[in-house]
Image (cartoon, rainbow, N blue to C red; front, side):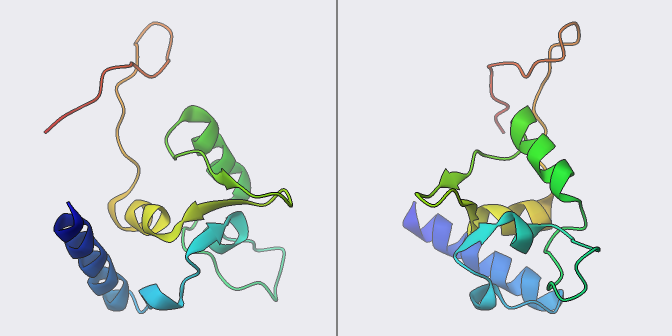
Length: 110
């Protein structure tokens, strides 16, 4: 499994280089401000995804993005590998119940 994980990291690094980004320059745990665009803050560096903060938190609430790691000082962060995977591959598709709209408990395989 480590070889697979390592090769995924290498693929992510190569894809980011093609986009002009350095994987190692990204923080290992990414806060919301590192992930999303913040147009009202001119001094803020651009986020990795072209979405708003509200959209990111809606994705978390819907289960499209994993729950963050919460630190003692109230900071929420996600592993760099998770965010880069979403940036490169997009959101995972999860089956929903057509009547309730809730995510089904069965996972898609293959």
